[in-house]
Length: 153
Image 1 (cartoon, rainbow, N blue to C red):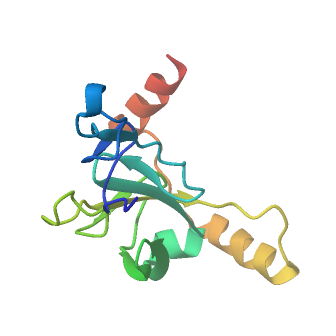
Image 2: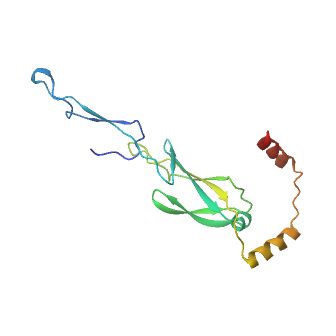
Image 3: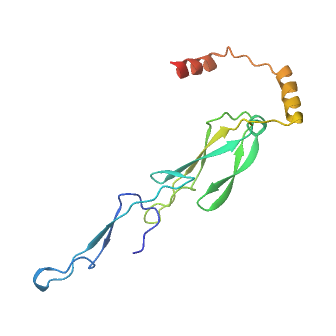
């Protein structure tokens, strides 16, 4: 049975003449195959769109970077602008699932997650301490406080 690209769980394939033999010598009926698509370890699918996550470092988020992300076709470069926040979702057009019938493809959405190191080298610690001394973080920003209130309730 040839499974066309882009089918989803619950899709039915009809195979003409491969079902049970007809009554009283009639022709064979059709066979219907119901598809169940196995979950992928990297991608989550919603229709023709794919979703994944990519870890980034503080330096990449603050300064901007270009990272490689996995797609169905291999790796793709993704530009991370400076000031990117954890949870930001980027869209890569036409890198999702193929549409049934070959009419285009869905998009790929990549959510970036800021990874905090569990341990630091002496040099990393020293540099972060220097950064902490010169940081001017005003957490009285209304949008920031609204976010905090929303988290707690």
